Length: 312
Image 1 (cartoon, rainbow, N blue to C red):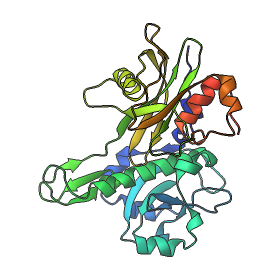
Image 2 (image 1 turned 45 degrees about the vertical axis):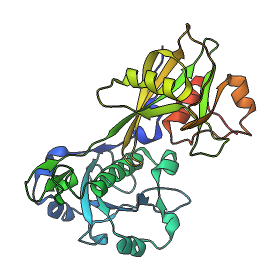
Image 3 (image 1 turned 120 degrees about the vertical axis):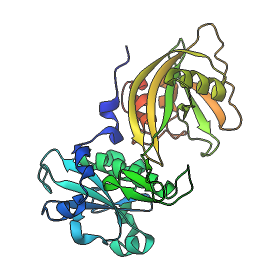
Image 4 (image 1 turned 90 degrees about the horizontal axis):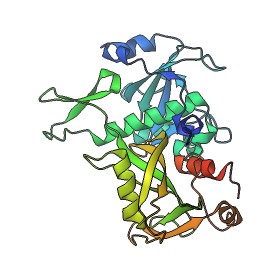
């Protein structure tokens, strides 16, 4: 039986109470600015501000350290005391424009993306980083209403956008995507190389869930489309937010249908190469192929199948 791997996924960690009821208070940001423990996390160009590049941690600044006209989003309150903040400290994301971002930190190495460094952040910082980027990305793509074309303005402490003409509220959306470790009767794992990657990079098969489709149906369809394989018994193993820009990765394991062939047929469009790997074969090729990064759910599913960490 497959066990959940969610607790081991770097970007699924959190130590924040999102405190959603506070979002309704019209003067919330003024109230929080008056609390000495409140902190602001600057966000710029899809990255978060770090204390240092050498030992990544979020730079959580005093509430007055960012421009007053920056888009603010209430992320919630810390649930545990840490060396830099007490439990219950309010955290606000501030989305900076180009001029403000450059003034905030001219050293570009202090701006980091949890896509690559998330596994180095603490539980609290990992959760804050993905929350801040996910909601900031949503704001960036919803400046206008998809229904009316009217301009929209932020509301509810940054958690809705409001059509300025109709008053209709729009709420954030997340794109569901499945990612699956497919094994055959010999417990070999199939890995593929995407057309957008270098030729020696391999990962699991994945794709977005289509409208009106269950997760299990998406697993079967994506595997068939990308590899020509038929799978049975999709089993959910865990999930991880992937706000680059707006996905939730839902991890599965599935087995090859015993009545079908194990012949691999890459679609030639998205997937250019597919290979079956035994554990020994994968270990022996770590110096010639590149696996997904340690922040990804793909790496976690591969290592869960392998039985431990994989080091090149």
